[in-house]
Structure formats: structure tokens, C-alpha cells
Image 1 (spheres, helix red, strand yellow):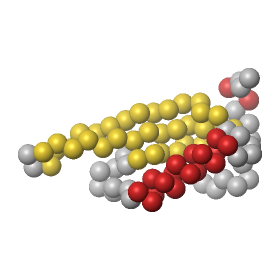
Image 2: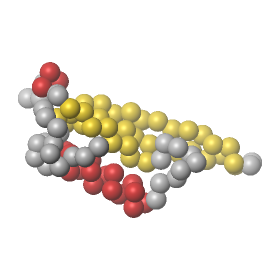
Image 3: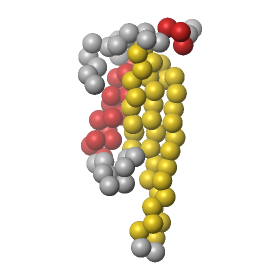
Length: 85
């Protein structure tokens, strides 16, 4: 059983584009997803302690576009040695 009082380090990982002036490539999004999977599966194994779901509606001329992103908060009992900030 996971207890939040055991969390000593939280890594914040954004999947998607949060800044409309800097659209991320598919490769950058894939890298973020790989990091998320490594955090959830690798030693030490992290646990999702929170998820932010956000979006922005952009007006481009007569058209509207929606950009969406998720931010995962991964909790660890200690900071993984392989994780660099």
C-alpha cells in the first residue's frame, strides 16, 4: 500500500504542449512519455500522486484550435539517481 507520507520527492512531467508559441514535436512528446514510463516502472518505482488536465483555445483567423496537455506528478520515496532535473 502506498502512503503519501512516504513521498520525499515529486517529479513533474508535462505531456503535450502548454505554450502555443512553442509547439512540441512528436519526438519531444515521445521522450516525455518514455520518461513517464521509466518513472512508473523503473527502480525506484514512482506512483502518480496527481494529474493536471489543461487546455487552451486559440483563435487563428476565423478558426479555433485547441491545444491540450497533461501534467503528471510522480511521487518517489527518494530521488532516483538516474533522474536529472
